[in-house]
Length: 431
Image (cartoon, rainbow, N blue to C red; front, side):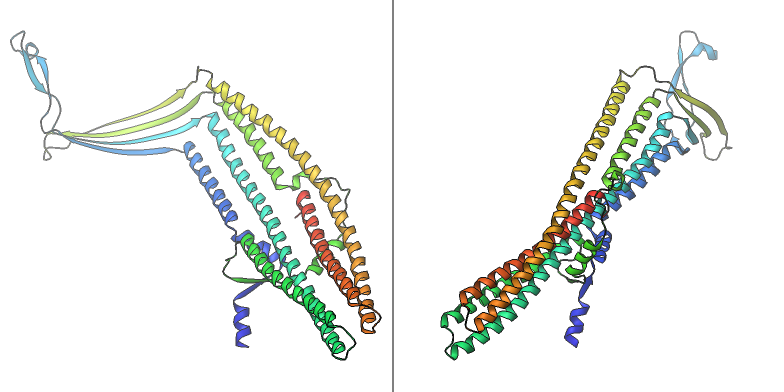
């Protein structure tokens, strides 16, 4: 009980949907995309700050150790003509305190740019949706690989058990003189081959689990287990009614939303460049308090001044820089429009192919069911004939190989059915 409890505690079990949700919350790519969203929000705040009032304060203090004099005509002070007199202008101590306020009143490119920043954030959020979509697809396929490997192991275990029983019976027949030693050796060889295949499958299961943990963003050193069963998922997919003629809704694909946002951004960029031809207006105000004295102990004399004003910037000629920017922005608009049309064509092709492959996989699984049922019937009949002495070990070996091939083909068909269903959901944007 202690051993089982310890094992259960150290191993998490996931359904397919739980594995997907774990990946969305913990995959490194998704975390990076979440940081991009936070960065986009920060850029919006930074750009918004351009249009908010700016307030700056400044304090300057100057102590003149030696005041620089100016040469003044001495005659102006009653001195002899033609001579100059050195007169110092200023005080020993100068203290200036200044407060400045500015506010953007109008700038067409700023308001359009602010819209673009918000739209860019929406674009980043859409990119997160694309990443989540890709993660869901990768985790689902990795999860199915684990289920298929487990299914093959279970089938091998049943075959090994059945073959061990046949080998035990054949040895008893051989000891009674009713079988050849070659028959026993052939069965032993078959059993050894099955055990080798089982060892391969065990290694494949381990590798499949590692791939699943990687796609989930789960610690590779920890153990996990899957809770769903392959037959259950196959039943869900085959029972589900699919309208294979339904019109394709391109908007369901997250990549399509990205193209739409890119188109909107390009339109805003054209508007921003056009609005940059308009004048911009900034208002400002400033107030100063100035103290000038030769000695700190003299009576303080404060001087002050206040001003307000407007700064109108009128673009006249920029060397055709804006015209070149506008032409480039329009080219980008055309490029996105062409990419959108090509993406629609690609989606249409992928949906048509995915529907065809899914129908083929459904027909294949039905054929494989009939084949495996027939192979099991032939194998059982051959076993009976062999036990009764009217069949050879060669026939038994041939029937055995045909059964194993039918089992492998059926399991592979199960995987193809599930994968083609996932590919169809991906193509339709319904995963």
